[in-house]
Amino acid sequence: MYLLYFKWVSILIHAFEEFLDWRFMKNVCKNLMRICGLCCFLGALLFTACSEIVGADGDATLPPDANRTIVHKIYPNDMAKNDSAAANLARGIMLVVHPRASYTLSFDVDPSLPAPELQLFRTFEIEGETGRVGFSKVRTLSPTVVNNRYVYKFNCEENKMSIWFTSLGVDGKYYEGDVNNISFTGVGAYSDHFSINLIVVGSMEKTRDGKSVEELSRYMLKMFREKYYGVKIDTLYVRYAHEHPTLGHKYPANKPWVAGKNSDDYFVSELAGWPEDGLRNALNIVLVHSIDDKDIMGFSRLFAGVMGAGKEGSVVIGEHVQRSNVEIELMSSKNIVMTAIHETGHFFGLRHTSATKRDMSQTSILEDGSKIFMSDMSNADDGLTDTPFCKFVQENALYKQAEEHEFVRGDIYYLKRPNHLAKSDLTSCPDLDNVMFPVTVDEDLDVSFTKQQMNLVRSSLMIFPH
Image (cartoon, rainbow, N blue to C red; front, side):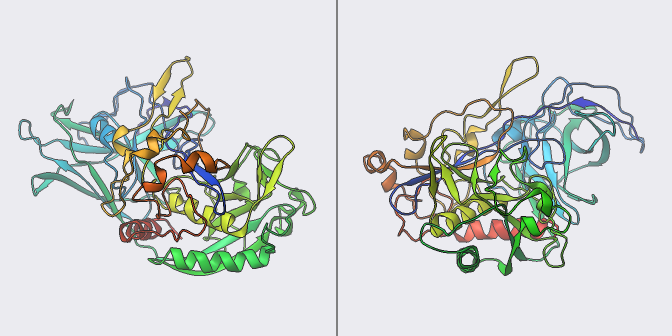
């Protein structure tokens, strides 16, 4: 096996989710993605070094282009256009793959050039080499032509979620043809059932409307089963961090836990994969006192890919919202539960129905101080035909331009601006009543998922090992 080493740095990949207060005001949810390395599924890799690779099978090997940064990634069954990924497929993008899943990558035929071969490369961390990663070739695929599209089919033989690189070539040279209407689909072998493990960290009080943790958990299960009608939620467990059999001493029950302040790991990842039958492979929703950022209720990752134990694979929700260094606001049970439902949508791969400015303006600062633009403007729409797009979302002044960050994570912002919103055009958006719309203007609005959204959630669930 031959290795190729690369420098990789943290980059911005995605979006902020924006929610409004479910009662009088607004939650603005921003879905950001934090890239922390290859083991983080949303981790993006910068490809900066090259050496010759010889295929063990004797085939000519065309590695990804070492002169470009690999920043674009495709998730299985994502219906957004992903034009940037398509444009960079030949010289290297990332494919997110899971064990026991079957995948199909396809795009339109360019009749001006011969059919290209697709090469796939497995990436892996190098022991003792912090910040460096290697890869080896998995296989070379020739396409079949179906309905004037090149179609490449393959199975994932990994034992965990992985990132594979691509190259596309003809006669040992990078393919120069047009790659249009790219599609990456996956079919998994896992169940469409899952359970939820609500992990309570630190001290808690009753919600603004008087619900205890146990009452909140029953309401959460009821609402999850109602909103996630396309899959089956078996049960919802409640576990307390201070009762963890080995880690409990780190999470005292009499002190409020502030994500991002009490530990560097916002996701409290070590509590995932609770060592108990039925909980090891559950969806982890971590309920903390608050989050150490102004106006943030919670966060997740787009297409997180991790059920049970896994770094930064939890949905994190705050019981309170920090308004300032001294002001803390307690949330209602509906705010907390609908935040969890929205962020779980991102966890299973759902984008905003209409992208915000923050979704479309992600950049990263490289080690040399230069900036790289990460976003794909073709993904302003989620690509689903039954979730209308609203142009007013990006035009609205509520959505500021994104700032450069060392990492990105999915956040929910809770802002009190009813007068501003009342004067905006957001109330006329056709996707206002969708769970994944980035703004909610009325607590009584009955939001829901569409059929296509539920199909995507179900397909992701069956791909994620659990």
